[in-house]
Amino acid sequence: MPPKLKLKGPWYDRTPDVFHLDEIAELIEDGEVKVHIEKAFGLDDVVQAHELLEGGHVRGKLVLDCS
Image 1 (cartoon, helix red, strand yellow):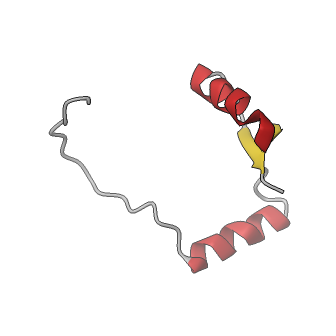
Image 2 (cartoon, one colour):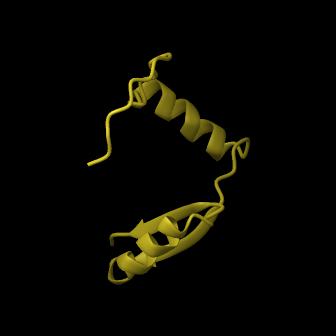
């Protein structure tokens, strides 16, 4: 296990709330924010998706299709 670092700085809460999620969804629907999807994977390809992510050269979002 890596050692714990004693860093000080501002605290940011990354828990999304309904207001912000609705606002982001509206921006995407209006075309003001574009989401770049690098690649979509099925559940059978989850290992390949993880390897690509760990490789560090992903320039967009990876999507895991759970349907």
